[in-house]
Image 1 (cartoon, rainbow, N blue to C red):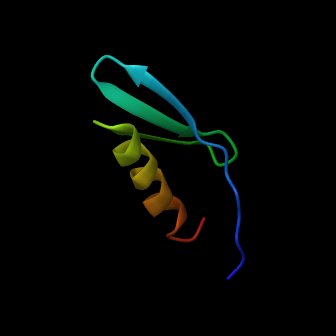
Image 2: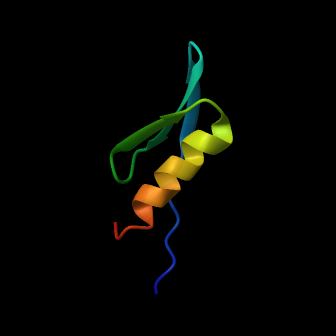
Length: 48
C-alpha cells in the first residue's frame, strides 16, 4: 500500500472544529480537533 500525505486545515466554528482537506476536497467536523481529524482520516483510508 502506498503512503500519501494530505494537508489538513483546522478551524473552529462556534462549538465545532472543522477539518478541511484541500487536495481531496473533503470537509469533516467534530467536537474536538482530534475527532474532526480522525473522521477525515477514516474517509481517506477507505480508498481515496
